[in-house]
Amino acid sequence: MRLFFRLIRLILTPFMLLTEKLTTPKAIVRSDAEQAAVDDACRQLALYQFSACPFCIKVRKEMARLGLNISKRDAQHNPQYRSELENGGGKIKVPCLRIETVTGEVQWLYESADIIAYLQQRFEHVSATAQ
Image (cartoon, rainbow, N blue to C red):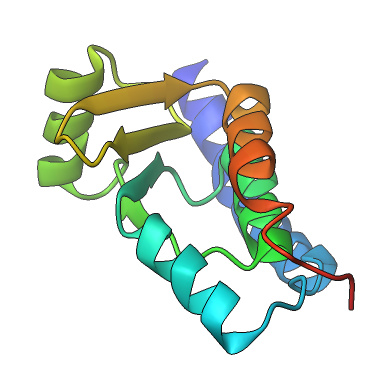
């Protein structure tokens, strides 16, 4: 049974990644100064993800729409990132957004809907206009 699901994933992965490429929206437009401020804020964020996870794809598409340059960490193939996710967040579950505050505190945010809501609340209205 496990082999069956691996085979299904192996077959579907290229299609999922191609679909993501073709359907990712264009980023909202900001002034250079506003985008620089957003990029600076994004340095405190990291997305732990698997490349073909549908929930991770959903988050990455929203990150692209919002024009966010958030570090993506492959917790599926990189043992260091997998370990960071397990030790810091408490479980190996993706997507997970690592949020570091200015005081150095770290929060781990799971669930794609929660991550998207956080990103929209924090970045969508930074003087952005639709393209």
